[in-house]
Length: 86
Image 1 (cartoon, rainbow, N blue to C red):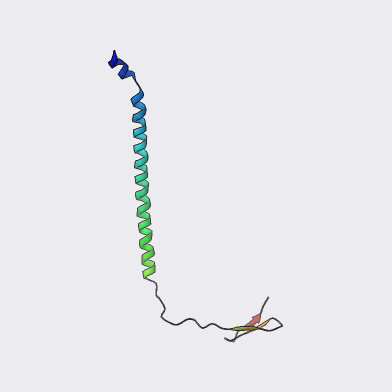
Image 2 (cartoon, rainbow, N blue to C red):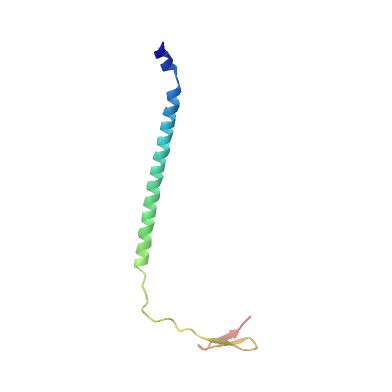
């Protein structure tokens, strides 16, 4: 009689369901992590390639022009340009 009661019991089925659900969630997380990790690695390599290909200028700083503003709003710059200020 004890064996029939054990076979009809559904307590173990709930625990088995939770184990299967938990394992599937962990598996999906591992798959997602693998996809994101490979994409991030590829992106990092692409950025590294682009940065390595950049040329760095050894020239000094660019010459800056200085401008003065007259009372009428006219500008006169050291590089020869001029214009009106709004």
